[in-house]
Length: 176
Image (tube, rainbow, N blue to C red; front, side, top):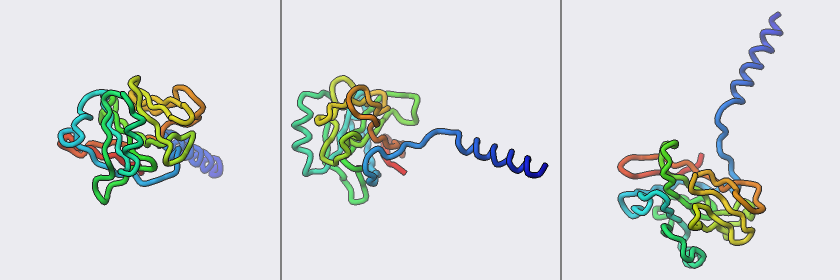
């Protein structure tokens, strides 16, 4: 009888621990992410729904800006801005989705295409609320904040990061 109770308790504990929200996993090589932005200061464009900010290393900004072409509502910034900030593997893409379903209206993604998995191959936002890899052609949702593959050869979504409000129009992007 004790054995049956023991097995039953172990089974219940296992089931309870297996249920719950799945944490995002790394779909690209892991790099630290800890970045702050403020929608009432330099990052004011993110106050508008659909607006996008891209944060990228200084050495890569000029080439990335050329890839953007005529995409509307996108601003690029050199980052990290502070010595204790980290922008992930290939840089950050932050979009104001306007969603009220999440704690903040923002979604944050790494710029790295998860199919290519190379630091220098970065997705580029489009005017259709998506981001497209210039190499493999995969298209990812960004306007709904999912990063899911919409078309193309990629089998994994964009690497997502958490966005938390830290008060007074300031937000923190991080991964733990």
